[in-house]
Image (cartoon, rainbow, N blue to C red):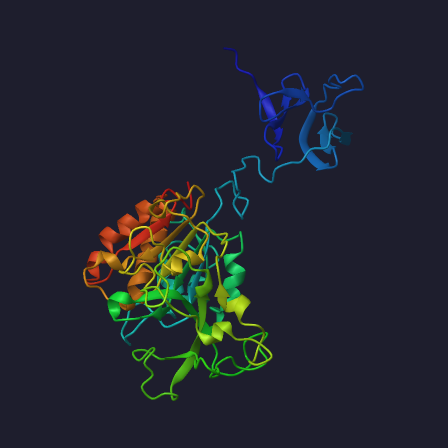
Length: 427
């Protein structure tokens, strides 16, 4: 075979190449390999040869070229959209560096994840702990006491919403944002306990709410009030190790927690009638609204049926999400909040979507209300590293974390994957 020599001039965004052959003709080959002249005459034939150097696309079919006599010429041809790189990668890196796109994740930690004053991992240092595990291109590592990863190849652009930025309003915006590949929530559940620990189940999760009335954008005054007929005030949170107990209430209260719940009237497929194990009613704060109660209408913000999330992978480190009372074919209340199918519930998930939650059934006699949040953060750290560095599927990553992290936390549950177990962050 005789070799064919040519000079690469440009790469169109639709695929293919623009090139100059050995005879000086400028041509373009489309993504299927079909070659046509770049500068065609009135009869459609090649108007070349055009001997050029440093051919550069300007705009609207106009090319600038350094001609053989040293002058610069403008040549008109077919309008062409040129890629940002001559070595483009599907999806494209945000830095246009010919690398695959960097996964983007957002982490929600509304509460203190530590329940002791000596914990090595806290809500405060969680971002630095995560970024010491996988390189974050957005991180100023001089602000962390943890060393920058030595692996400069694998990256994850992580964003952290901790404490007063971990609000339900921000969550609504992030969960509907196609820019995120994964979202992690590590915090507290809204728990219903009809008859002891084995009956506990989650009907939602809790977000940060400030102590001071009216400081949440859009609120006229505090939602932390007692509601008529359904007495309810927001859960107080204190510094560790007291956390949610707040023994000197109201002294020492750092903030409140605002409920985000599954609408009880939309639950399906569960033993949910009077006296049944899944029977529950929503918290008064989620049902309230003007003019009787302060703030805008709470329901659209705090009460949901099903969320059509845009992220591929959801991780929830919280209590009671996959409770012990679940029977075959039953989709727990919390999982009914998300637009994810699962083969165990009759409909396999074919889209690249998955949700990771603690499995209370994995520990005999486990109280599902005692999932340790520091443990959950360690699980997510390992899972995310496996997804990015190991390029594992979500099921492989969770299996690895269950085999390596869970044994170091006696009494804590394994995590389970619902949805499409073959979902990946990177390939």
